[in-house]
Image (tube, rainbow, N blue to C red; front, side):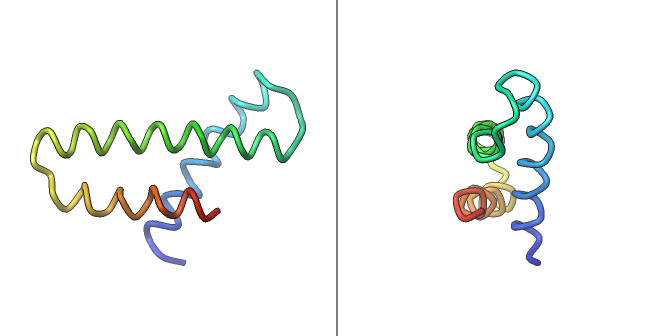
Length: 71
């Protein structure tokens, strides 16, 4: 498993309990909403890293963003 794929899965996994608490227990809906939360978190990392010139971090999290879409 690639490092970016692991980060994407980890982000989704971290958001699942919060989504489930707020939205209920439908597994497909929980996964969809956890992915949306992870996507938002990655967008924030990208925004910060681009603003401050962290090119390596930007490239890595662009890949994480793609992995979130694929999971």
